[in-house]
Image 1 (cartoon, helix red, strand yellow):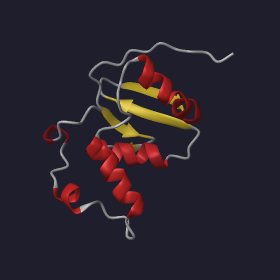
Image 2 (cartoon, rainbow, N blue to C red):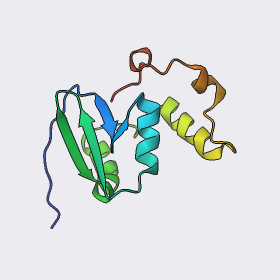
Image 3 (spheres, rainbow, N blue to C red):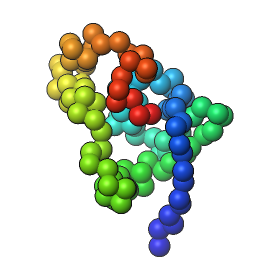
Image 4 (cartoon, rainbow, N blue to C red):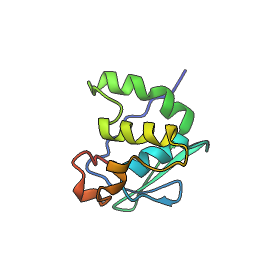
Length: 112
């Protein structure tokens, strides 16, 4: 039987993902998508650390979205960015997104 844990993290900013400083939501999404480690270690502000089993986190995503009535796993702009990274021959970000300011405050979809 799988053990479920109820957790509330409100208004927390992700500072690091598996030891890598997080600059923006686009980078965080890419780090998560490409992670092959057994665990996701998220260093949050207020000296909080959240550790998730990678396989369980990925397997639980659809149910979490459904239970909490969340319509999409990620914003359209993040999805476009990741798609561009996967299809680009040189790994560069799409021009429009690459030119955008990468500061977290400048992005309305920064829900980290």
